[in-house]
Image 1: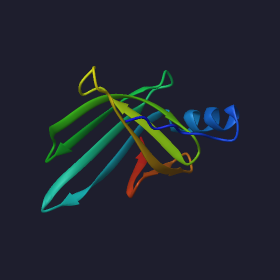
Image 2: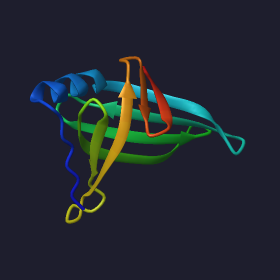
Image 3: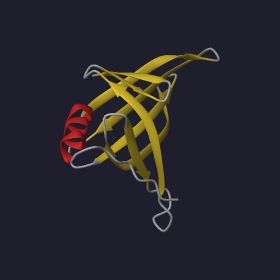
Amino acid sequence: MAIVATSCSKDDDDVANTDLVGTWVSEGSMYDDDYRLLLIFKSDGTGSFTAYEENEEVESESFTWSATKETITVTYDFDPKHPETQPYKISSNGKVLTINEITYHRQ
């Protein structure tokens, strides 16, 4: 599956990418279990996602990414022959990042 993210100019991409670089955390409870989601976006376009339940790591994935002000496109390398690319709607003010309906705070 191929997904293309577009923007009005190259400057839009640079601003969005710079704003997202860093570590983002979402914490809460679901079904009586505490969870913590950790997203790391690096300036070289790579990143990682780690999910914790009750302080135990339950999932960890590496990815590549690019963003505009409204969309982040993430490519997961589950199977190197068939990478999976997903676009997500985002909004960020530099301290709070919302991806789809999950809110993360800059760490």
